[in-house]
Amino acid sequence: MSTVHAYAATEANGILKPFEYELGSIGPQEVDIAVESCGICHSDLSMLQDAWGMTQFPFVPGHEVIGKVFAVGEHVSHLAIGDRVGLGWHSGYCMTCDQCLEGHHNLCSTAEPTIVGRHGGFADKVRAQAASVAKLPDELDPKKAGPLLCGGMAVFNPLVQYDMSPTGNVGVIGIGGLGHLALKFADAWGCHMTAFTSSGLKQQEALTLGAHETINSRDPDAIKAAAGRFDLLLSTVNVPLDWNAFLETLKPRGRLHMLGAVTEPLDLNLIPMMFNQLSVGSSPVGSPATIRKMLAFAARHNINPVTEHFSFDQVNDAMERLQSGKARYRIVLNHD
Ligand SMILES: NC(=O)c1ccc[n+]([C@@H]2O[C@H](COP(=O)([O-])OP(=O)(O)OC[C@H]3O[C@@H](n4cnc5c(N)ncnc54)[C@H](OP(=O)(O)O)[C@@H]3O)[C@@H](O)[C@H]2O)c1
Ligand SMILES: [Zn+2]
Ligand SMILES: [Zn+2]
Image: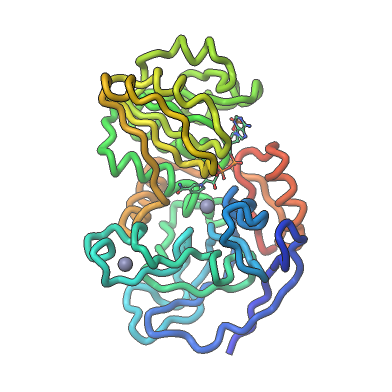
């Protein structure tokens, strides 16, 4: 038996307080991870606020975990005690549905999110199905790599899903945790990158993160001037913007891919989409195989998240900092 020392909220928008629970005996396909660090994704904040109406309390956030395996179930063969691993948004899949069997585990209808109906990685330990856990390449810094597991995966996945051409033009709307990693990944992929940001300071900073140019995401004239330019737009913003203005910036056959969790219905004009054969879509993180690809790509191209660090006992300050919108660009909690 192993006691987990975690941080939990007991109500929506509540303070995260020390909370303990027992892991119980390990299942044959599971691993237990001693958490070294955990990134804070905006989804942790939205879940703390119960913004999606699916939070269960006590709620332990945290789904960008880096740590070392300290126990393995009897049928786990690809991970061993002592391996340094990462765990992202999903901590388990059914492994038998068509989506799982076709390698699209992240689309499994019963995939288990790490922080929904179970306790996440704001803790000293976390358990997960071994298939959802990836070995961390040695080249990646374990103190900073956590945000790759959810934020990084979310923005890398569309490059893989849509066979993004390295000669393509990609725009990223919103340069936060996901957005700054989108710039880094798609720049390394070879694309010409444009950052859309509402922040004057970030317009300069984005150029050091892989953007070749920047546009004010709240300036209608500047957006209009980019008409017909992009093959792919990745939106990481969770508030409604003038999506029709952004559709105008796509090339024929372009795609507006909405990664940010906008909860309002989309207001979209069909006719420009029809005449230009545009697509609008979304996707959740990525499959285990794509997570491995993403980590290998990050290691090869030296892609590290740009991070701010807090200790786990400063978790409430860290959440407040994320909410303020001032974080550059992802906050990571570390055990000292
Ligand atoms: N689909 C997936 O797989 C997936 C995975 C993880 C997270 N998510 C979701 O993706 C979204 C982003 O997460 P994150 O962790 O990257 O959040 P974040 O670090 O807070 O970044 C969001 C960015 O959106 C922009 N933004 C926020 N409010 C805005 C406003 N009123 N007007 C214009 N721009 C605004 C800001 O960029 P600028 O300062 O540059 O304007 C901000 O940095 C969240 O909704 C999260 O739940 C989705
Ligand atoms: Zn996330
Ligand atoms: Zn399944």
